[in-house]
Length: 393
Ligand SMILES: Cc1ncc(COP(=O)(O)O)c(C=O)c1O
Image (cartoon, rainbow, N blue to C red; front, side, top):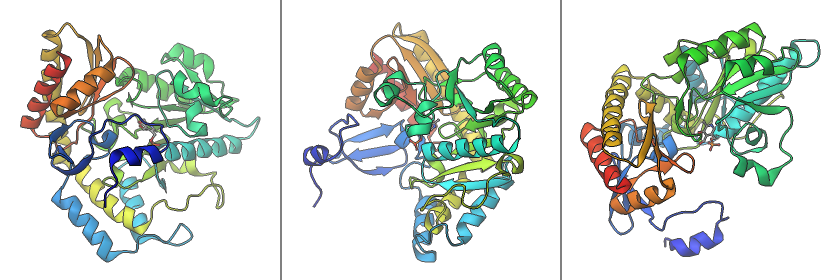
């Protein structure tokens, strides 16, 4: 028997404020709640459900994985699917090495350890500092919280992990901060998601790449939210024509199963030795089999072209909305990740949208965020923007 939401919520640790609706099924870009009410989903499980709900290919991948592989063997033993996935990821990216884990924050923690290990191997005084940017969000574990620029998330847990600091999104400030003797890495989201959906200027990204190379500092790109096709390219870094030393990914990797990964060049990964890092579940046969299917789908040029087309339509629809509403201050985004600065509490508009049958989320107190499944159709896009117009009022 399914527990009622009220009894469940009393047993759960109260770190989320959830609306009462409980989603029980879904199809395409729609979710259905226990009362049978339908919702157009522009949240996608926070940028996880790239292929939407009930996707026949993904369903088949799950069934094949159930029938054709073990669920788990641990990283003490080989997994053919994990090895194949790592090969595919290196073939499709800048990377030479892949480490699998189970979430975005865990991927970033792995990247920080890799950077510190690399920094130590450079000789001299150990290069150990990690620098993140104003507005950055990299997770909520101890190391990643210190790199996450959300004062209200940080304050209750001080002192935070040391050797991690936040610098303005400004090349002059970074020039001052990037001491080649002490700094191991800079971590950046090419499109800052939780911090308000800010697409970092390609010229800034190229400047940062040049600066990190000049100072012998690793560049870690966090594409946990903006990567894997969401910008209309497989990797968000392609938009600025640069490549990182380390890349972290997670959310959409395994069709809703928890999975993350650290991708790295041979140089950045070169200092990591057996025993330096580990995780029980990462890259197991079941999750990797499903992830092989998802990677195939999101890297398909037709899927990427589809995202670019929908992205252009969404941009135009949101510009029209902005032109006709006093309540919209700014619209920012690319592909299928968009932020809308609004004149009233974003949480209130999110709640009104839910009542109207549209799921959206916020990215800060006054910013709405749209991160729909990548398979969004033109008709659903227009329907969603229509509902959003009503919710904004
Ligand atoms: C850019 C970015 N990095 C890291 C994370 C943390 O990922 P997770 O919640 O899987 O730990 C998130 C989650 O929203 C994210 O958007």
